Amino acid sequence: MLWHVILGLLRDGRLHHGYELMTGYRVQSGTPASPGNFYRELARLETHGFVETGVNPPDADARRIPYHITERGRGAFDRWLQAPPLSEGELSGWMLFAGRLSAPDRERILDGWQEQLWLRNQELSRLYRQTLDDAKACRPATEYRPLRVLLSRQLKHVAADLAFLEELRADLRAWIGEQNQPVADDLAIPPAVTGTTDAAPELRRARS
Image (cartoon, rainbow, N blue to C red; front, side, top):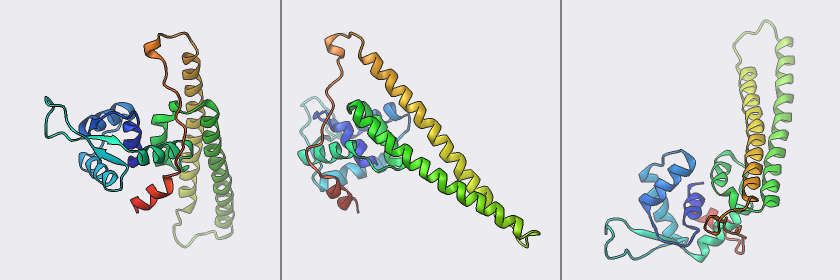
């Protein structure tokens, strides 16, 4: 996920040094990033051609290396933004840039996440009921089996994710409503990005 977040922070095409990127990530996500991990991922992105180093202005701190995104990096990020893997870590990063997508694309991705959660809830509920039936048939139990409470914990997590998803939808719709109000030209929202290069498979191979 950190790969795509770094690419998203560089997607404006300007030069950014590592500390600036880390600060931007912390401000937008509320989560501090490990400097070691962040610079390690930047180095790997450069090795695989997704970012390049630039030249500092004369008055800049020479210790801070500036980076910019490459065409390959833009393609990888745009493709990921349009179709992120439906996992907790990836969606947490995707939400940082969800405002760059059109409303239909956002709804399509959130619908997919909701369907995945609903199917997971159905499967966990089935297993939970089966565990209760098995426990009744085996009383008194000869040893402690925590499966029932573990399944209950997972069900609570899925329920929390479904509730969060509805909150996220409402927040995005409220934001869209705000954008439809007249604003000054210098506050206008930039156009949504569109994926033109399917570089996501290359990115996944590079990470492995």
